[in-house]
Image (cartoon, rainbow, N blue to C red):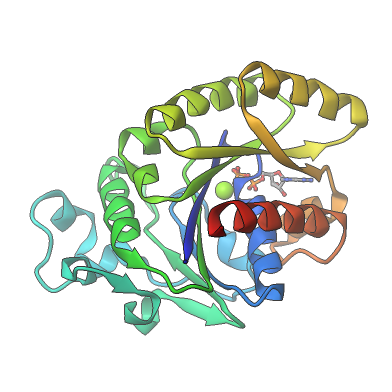
Length: 256
Ligand SMILES: Nc1ncnc2c1ncn2[C@@H]1O[C@H](COP(=O)(O)OP(=O)(O)O)[C@@H](O)[C@H]1O
Ligand SMILES: [Mg+2]
């Protein structure tokens, strides 16, 4: 069975970082990974994943934002009953070593309008995406909780919630717990930017109070910070190992 996992949480908490680390780990496990960039404000994910340029947005395939708002273009992949990774036109997916990246769309200009059509496209794409046994889709969600309102998370097998050491991040986590519960979705938290045992303990307690299951912890790591600063992929180390444990947990608990 293939798996669809969304990664959500507060802006800046480390969603894209976790996506990058998980994608790297999945490659090593002979899983085929499709990263779905669904955060239109995210411009550098392709660099983190080691690509030189981003794929053409899927939004272009369906005629851009205007068309999707009205009636969908007649000749788009979303009209098919299901979408296999191999059905995605070459320009719209970039690949290397078992890793593929697609992007829903980006807001390039001010006043381009609201992101709802992107939400609709993400939802339909994930609904129709049909994965093989060894394929895993990891969706880098937009920050916050709006995607729940748009029903995007309905089509995933589990939600990974990234929590950084901040009041705001915990507050969003509590809200997400509520929304995921309403949808009967499995929700697992991953702490990020943990700089001490003390911080970890505090965050663990907070999550426990909200009955959120914690499955992993990514340390505050200068390698991640520097990779982010320079726009390059992560290098092996503690953060990768921590993400590997998260991936193992997910695979065991969804696959079985
Ligand atoms: N574990 C970490 N250690 C150090 N820096 C981190 C870590 N996780 C994220 N960062 C940095 O924090 C910033 C936000 O991370 P990012 O993954 O882009 O967040 P999001 O996708 O949730 O907005 C980036 O500059 C990133 O390099
Ligand atoms: Mg991001």
